[in-house]
Length: 127
Image (cartoon, rainbow, N blue to C red):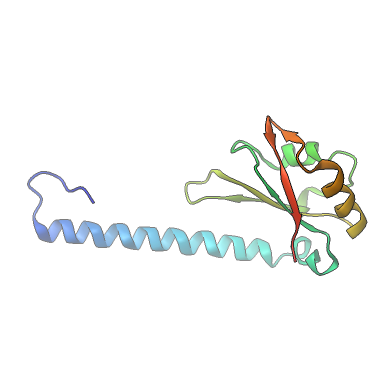
């Protein structure tokens, strides 16, 4: 870790400790936010095979882009969970809950490797 010129060892140690606390708090906050979404009703459908993980999303992708990508699959907006990194940017992944196992299978078969905003999208069932 870089320290300011003329900073005492005590101040450098205190700054390092503060940065470690901030990083730990940010990680805990991100984990808590994902746990809240993971426990919601739409995401609990994975027992029926209707939860699909998307990878390769553009960093600018949002719920509207995913709804557009799956146009015609009866996808509810509250069934989409876009995953973000600690800086608030899309991580390139999302979890999508389809109304049925059949629609999820159809989407994975028909839409895998199609482009979203120029990126090829990979999909897999969550187990």
